[in-house]
Figure 1: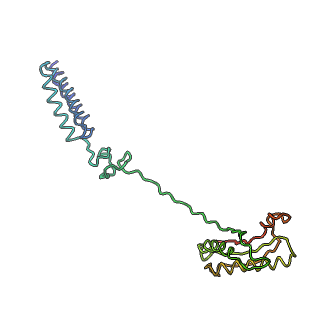
Figure 2 (figure 1 turned 90 degrees about the vertical axis):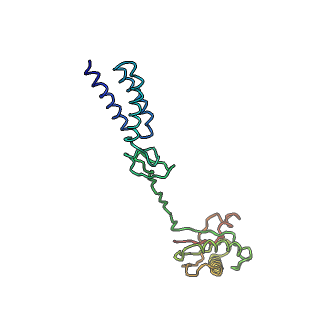
Figure 3 (figure 1 turned 30 degrees about the horizontal axis):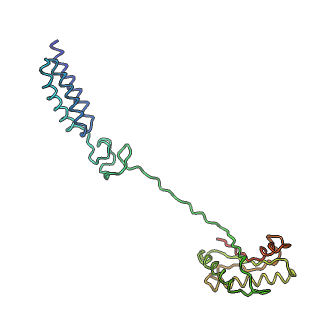
Length: 230
């Protein structure tokens, strides 16, 4: 029995201190409380009158041991220093289990360039039976010119004029060609580089997009198309 009374206190005290060594410094109250309970048990092995003193003595030792030997958290990120692979993390920064700010993968946006685009101009009507632009036509083309000037110098522009089927084929062919050139010259005067234009032609009535038997269809067929190749 005497051997048990001598060995038991050492075993219990060693267990408490070993457990406290794995805690953080901020857990010293827990260490102290655990030590107090163990101290009381140690004192009780001698007599009940030793329980209070044992609790106070061992509790204090355990709390101090935890403070000195415990695992600290110097940057306050919640990760013990022994596991913190990124010490000195600024306060308030979210960290992972290793104490490091999570790595955010860079998002690379792919820029999709449309290689070919066609601008269809239907609100340029010209003067009756001619290729001369009206003031309203020029206002409409100003918007187109602003758009085309944003293109790279390497962009290739192909302008094609179209008519409806009213009149002879040969006449419509010449008229559409003149109107295509009239639109092109105005765009150049408005600042679109002449070098961007690689072709200016008239297709006459050969490429309708609607029924020429109706007024609405003929209106759709009277158009100028600008094809952009980038």
